[in-house]
Length: 231
Image (cartoon, rainbow, N blue to C red; front, top):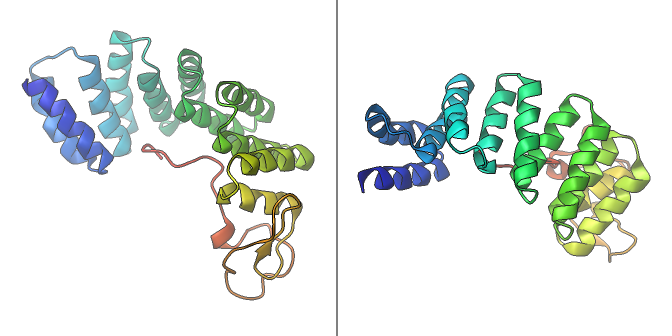
């Protein structure tokens, strides 16, 4: 039907990073007064992608009221509230999303990031440990756990987490880079790992020295949290 087609098209436009076009496609269905949770959620996600956080929150709150058990909607609502600087509400929504779907990495990662930004390192650790229980074989989860330990200045556990990520995925570069950062080893374009053969990566120009500086060379910088469609 027409509504179904509009929602499918909007989803495709959002995947292609075209939020304005997605909003335009959904607008006629909204004018008809459709109380459809997915329609409202897609509209909210369109505004979220366009960084209009107030409008995003308004639509996502309506969608969440219609579908209170939808973890993905609560995740988007939490992200929009983060964009507005409403930390308490945002963290509450992200916690509910993570509870509804423990394997939801988007909610889990966003919750960890929010707690880190507030300096709540123990809460960030608890959040990533909960996600680890649901996804013990996810290298990205262990890499983020190592990042939390880095923030706590717990370098031993950070290295253990990065090594676990590499044991799961030996070519996962973010964990290699973070392991090098935690160990402070950066020599002649080689990143050394005790349990791996020496692996060579491109050197970012000359003169970086043997120890990774506080601001790492751009080719070694890595986000602790994977990019998502809302980043």
